[in-house]
Length: 321
Image 1 (spheres, rainbow, N blue to C red):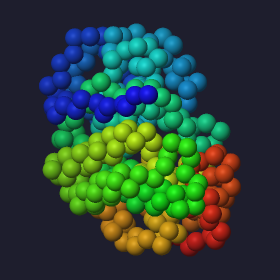
Image 2: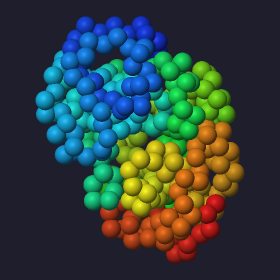
Image 3: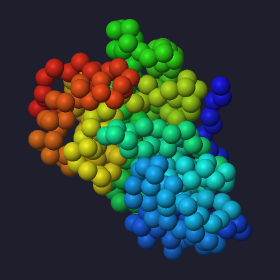
């Protein structure tokens, strides 16, 4: 057994990054168009990632040439880069262009498989380079969308407690009271910085990054993600099947947090205010898709053997919140 670390985090303007090794670049076209002019990297290979599947990553990296992998962009780019760097035994440097997810800090790569998200053990980036001016200039709807992976503590931890009460936590995921309290403190930190982070304020973005780092390391320490991943993420996975590829992570998880928190009997107003402050689009999933997704969520959760939560026991189809 081992416990993964988070990456070494360095604060540096992208214009000041120096690299002498041949760089294999993993990016997305919009991200590269936005920040490529700030970077002076000795590129030996470059790929534009469009799909989160192991087969696609294997195919696109077959002709890779380089001594170090750089990931420039969002969650899809870094997940692919983590996989490629792990497969090739290469160091990995990550340059996020928005604080859109927690994937920049984790050791796993999310792939779409049979209608659900599964996680492959890969590696965390060796270096995470943060340029607050770049983050602040990101499109408003993704600039601070990583807050969704923090606000999901409200619903994920509720599910964790609920599963413990029902005797349904999977082996190795037993409820740990102090970890739950730690997660609650991280959630409060996220709520506190939402307005500033959403505006692109440096201190707000720094606090959001700190909260993401603490959330990831907490999950690393206990060996699972129950404190922050529950029925709200299951909703997002299921809704993505209906919506198709293309919607950002926050557009799917954000509405899921509100819907599931309401089903859990929680006060959703602080969560809604934080999501709105971070400019998370809450209406990009049509009402009919929300209704259908919530109706099929118990079957979906059982079908994919997801850790027990309220998704497994929903019996009513709610109005859109």
